Image (cartoon, rainbow, N blue to C red; front, side):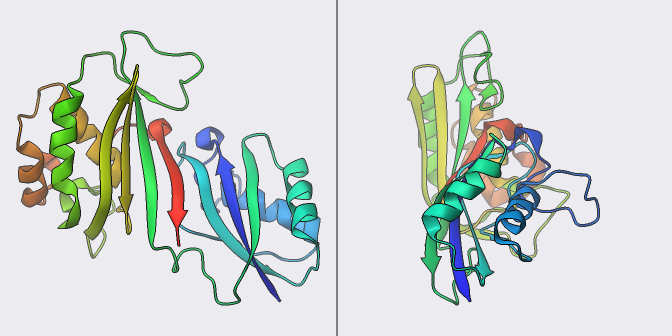
Length: 247
């Protein structure tokens, strides 16, 4: 039995998210489309294990997933066959042989997410499904300074979705940065794990700081307060992308 690891890129605009909706099969998921395509190519039942879920509308530059198969198909032929059958908004960018015990979710050491903001007076036709458009001026330097306070091991209860509170809201942010490239502002976060909507809530809070609604020093106070109502809004899904899963 072979254990194969996939690297997948996708535009999440037309999907209910990564996870297969077993109770509502009419909803189209990334996992569902991939499993169906794998079954067609390999002619056997396939259970795909992803590194984690991405929500409806969220994109991935390098999602990781693995599955086990009895097929002896070459990796080159498998990748070519999959990409020939997959829709244009899902592609397999790489396939590797993994150890028999490899698990995409449990073996992940960290994940890197990027939230992208288009910050100029007018929106973009071409970027509308890839960025969050914010037309008012933002002070990126202050956003950069405030973001540093989130680095390290903390209780991120203030930044988790109030509708889906997890038992343990403690996570370790290994790296966080805010950069500007012309009209685009990037918020990059690497952590050992993420709470539901954590990146989108942090990004919404940083915007409130950048626009001056929240004063300097407020991010540390929000973090210490452990109350979702203290933080900024949840930004839309289209600006979020899973950049990399590290093992």
